[in-house]
Length: 214
Ligand SMILES: [Zn+2]
Image (cartoon, rainbow, N blue to C red; front, side, top):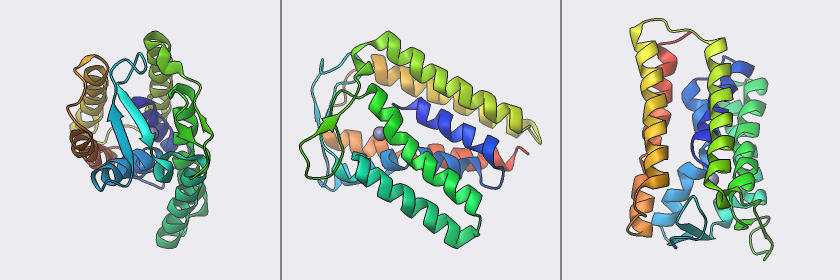
């Protein structure tokens, strides 16, 4: 999953305006933001296996720290707790924790059974919507559009930048998503790690949008 996580991030703003859109993006996409770092460090493993599902050539062979249910639960608690220490806002802390956790359940819908429940345990789950490109596009597109709608219904642009930065990001995310789906497979795990780290720019883009909307 890719754009659906950002859809959930957009939706965060509906529940509380106290945190920036960038923070909501960071929470919803947290485990995919740290995954590329762990891949580059060789701690988690990904292989390129074209045809493994209809949607992605990536075979997530080992990623218990970022993508096991237990791991995501710990990240969710840590994320919410650290935010609480910094901002003393319990409502937003809970929203952020739930956003971190939402990542695993959205991934559960689409991934083929490669998501561990607990590090070290053989059991891996995934409902496998990735076996159908059309179903994946519908589900992921729907989550993204609903999230964007909730965001639009709870914020408005303060200036022209607030409009263009937002729609620029929507187009940009759509373009990356399409090129991931229909482009050639990545050349190596290292390349995936490097490109994956560029997602931090989307988080920064979220902060930029937020400053220009109210
Ligand atoms: Zn993920």
